[in-house]
Amino acid sequence: MVIKDILVHVDTTPSCEDRLALAADVAERFDARLTGVGLADDIAAQEMFVEQLDKAKVAGEWQASAGDLVAFITDRAKASDLVVLGQPMPVSSVLDAPEDVILGCGRPVLIAPYAWHFIGRIGAIALVAWNGSREATRALHDALPLLAGAAVVTLFSVNPDPDEDWMLDGELVRHLARHTIEATEEKVSPKGVTTSEAVLSRIADVNADILVMGAYGHSRLRETILGGMTRDMLQRAKVPILMSH
Image (cartoon, rainbow, N blue to C red; front, side, top):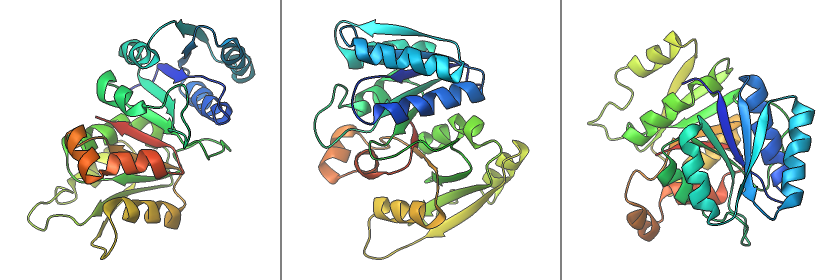
């Protein structure tokens, strides 16, 4: 995938400045056009976006929504390569349901944590939550541009089924190598922790600056009832997450 059009949600929540800086950096990195989306009456958000465009020296435009912001972003994402959203905050925000965009837009979504600060380009140390699913496969391939030039890429599997070779006998690593991405496999079967907890712990251990994962491998209703990994990561991750559904 080539990243040439990026859509970012802009508001006046405290975390938006870092989210916008992340989106602008990715746009500068790939010489992409950056489109900011926000509510029509949010003049402060529009001004913040225009200032960031000038600072980053990237091309872009502002698009305002007068109605349902989630529906507006989901629709505009059809003409984008990447969507950048903020992690839901503990208190309600203007866009407090990024999962609706993830499920509906058909594009990879980069989630910027609310308690995270942009300090430089992401993708140097990447953790890929890998379970062999369609969603994980799509996320990995959607992330290829961001993983190019990474120092460390780990394909991390938690409690893999011994009867299923999720790594394809090393072919997945060799495939990434053909994209000039050096990756390693890591399989763990921890006791007494959930898959989400194992992934969060590994992110901290390797000091990863991005997590790549598929979103909603089960139905959203089932994940809500069972406490799925997608919801856990949207609530708890402290690094940007590239999610694809």
